[in-house]
Structures are given as C-alpha cells and as structure tokens.
Length: 112
Length: 108
Image (cartoon, rainbow over all chains, first blue to last red):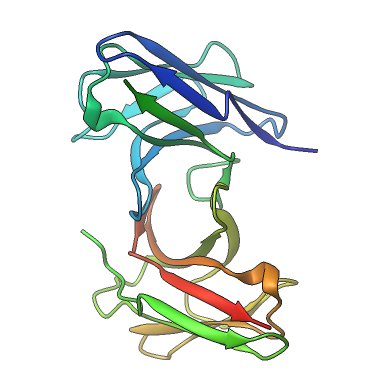
C-alpha cells in the first residue's frame, strides 16, 4: 500500500545524457517535493509544487527541472547530468505546505 | 544552515527506552520541531512534531523544554527495527531545516 511511489529505485545514466525520474502519489496531496540526498548527508530541497505553482529553491542548479502534469504525478528532469549529481533523489508529498511530509523510498542515480 | 544540533551516534539496548536529544537554541517562536527517521535505503519517515507542548503518538513522545531551546525524542521500547538515522528538524513555514541526524543502533 505504498503511497508515494518512485520509479525506478535505481537509475544509471551517462555523463551529459538527460534523465527523468518519476514520482506518483495515491494520497491526493496538494504539495509535491523533490529532494537530493548525498551519502551521509541530510536531504536537500530542490523545489516543490503547491498544486500547479512551482517553487524553486534559490540554490537549485538550472540543470534541474520539474514537471507536474496532474495531482498524482511529478517528474524530475536532469538536463545534463554531471558526476556531482550522483545521489539519492527523494520525492515527498504533503496535504499543505505546513503539514508533515510523506516520502517515497527514493531513486538512486548513478552517473557513468 | 542547520538550526539543530544532535549527537552523531547513540546506542540503545533492545526493549529499553531510547532518548534522543536535540538542541535548537536559535529556534523562533513560530518554528515547529519535527522528527523524522531514515532506515537504510529507505525514504525518511515522519515520527512526530510539536511547537511548545509535549506530544505523544503511537511511535514516540516528544518532550520540548519550556524555553524551547532543546527537545528529546523518546522511543519507549526500542526494537531492532528502530535502528535508523533520526533527524531533528526545525520547520519554518513550508521549509524543513534538517540537522545532521543521530545514528541510533539498537542492540540485542
């Protein structure tokens, strides 16, 4: 009964080759978040959607983009992955921006 | 910048209470304290949150000092499945400010 689903769990891409990570939710939450988590570090917020409103964090590189075509799905696009983008990418949802966030189990991205 | 300070690691015997401390001396009056945990290779899991009062749910209890400068997460009867990294977090409006976490090892 997974509520925030991330596919695939593991993704390998080549240096510079665009990659898309996906997230879906069955909670019907208004807010969806994307985080980057590197080894032994806390998650770092990249951006989030409140409904269709996109909110980018000031220090998120332009290389990272996102799309939310409907309430249930959200995508993270990395246009030209570099070696430093290898990380776990976590999707989370919440009913509202001031409510607890529910996380998926992440997609671990490797760059060759 | 992290607004919380936690010990990097702790040990606890199975069946005993695990008390995880957190300092947040610069917390503002409208900032909540949140606790999440992350089991290896999984996403973070919400545990509990509070503003001023102590809170309890089916997972844990949260004790916040009167001056709100520190808090303690209590797992009343730790099991091996509670082995995880526990993050003490301050929430300001919509943003979670994550600490570095405490790696809790529950030993048989």
